[in-house]
Length: 193
Image (cartoon, rainbow, N blue to C red; front, side, top):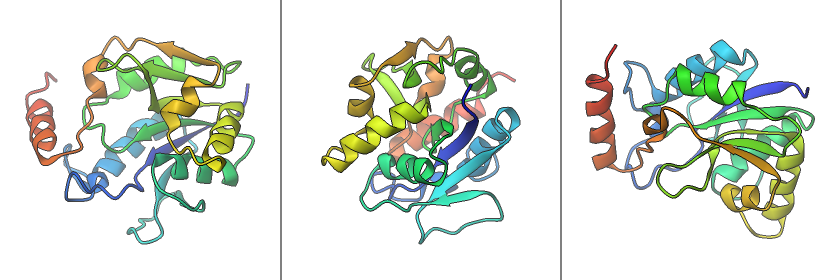
């Protein structure tokens, strides 16, 4: 099976949130660190994807090396750095995700497919940023990106992927606005331990 690496995507501009989503301390530490610790416990070779102008801590980082915008840039920068690796990818705007969801996705990986992704509980489409991308899927994303299409979900839909239901689908909640941040903070605070 292809070597698996972890990637926490933190290179977005967070314009809707009006603050850097990767730095919000939902769990008492910056969100990038919370996610990094979760993934790194299961996938030891884990990186954080940042833009060049972001503060970089003393951790394994993949800096955006591909021109353009959107999460595809982080994915393709990781693919360029390690073209033979598969990537377990998490976006930094997932404050409710926990180890049980991560473990479930890892257990259901199908390395013969281009990707393994959770289904979105909102629109029932694959979640490209809570997924395991195999090198073949990243190559398809690269071709799509080079043709002017920078949406990872659309590239995934054109690929041979496995879509799985997460038993803890509420953990896939995205926090992209100040209102969603408040919802997430409330949910984290009142989560059963």
